[in-house]
Image (tube, rainbow over all chains, first blue to last red; front, side, top):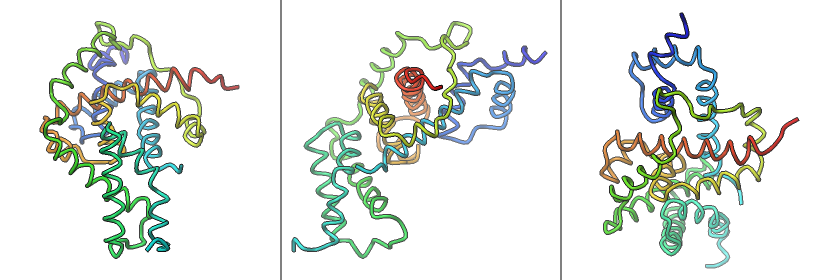
Length: 66
Length: 191
């Protein structure tokens, strides 16, 4: 069952990996676990997109005009 | 020579540089000094400006080095490990996840974030959210996301471990994401 696979990695753990993905290259095993979790978790999929928005917002904040 | 047009062009970026330096150093006077040094260095090293990047990008590059120097010189007050530990404790009071590791409050849809990024009001909300971060956490986060220093550089400058850094950045992103959701994406009903 797909729902059981999500338990391989919790949302808490997935959120940590998603953040670290912006700071380091994840190991293959971590990428696999994360992909499996994201494939069945809407909340973490949203979170993943939002982290990208946060990063882009910060980059823009650093270069915006006065 | 006051009439130097290049000097005038550099000066036009002063406010922007100050904003970046203040966020980074959390010290108004020191930020002024660092920006002044940056502009002086830029003027002296104008040959170094290749024209391939914008003036602002070039200035930001110089500012980055001046900020790192300033942090290094301020060894009396580096980002203390104790300060970061204290901030970690504060965060623990408001758990984001239930015991089993599920979201306490799952992230909601942000609709069309592209339009937010182009709005000045959104940038103001972002600024207020950044100001709410614990100070040491905010400084580390700005080093990473605004100055775009590598994690190696940051760890070396602050003498913290990579693990420690990942936790700090994680905390900053979680808090910022939550703040933006509350004060922008959820607060603005979109038709």
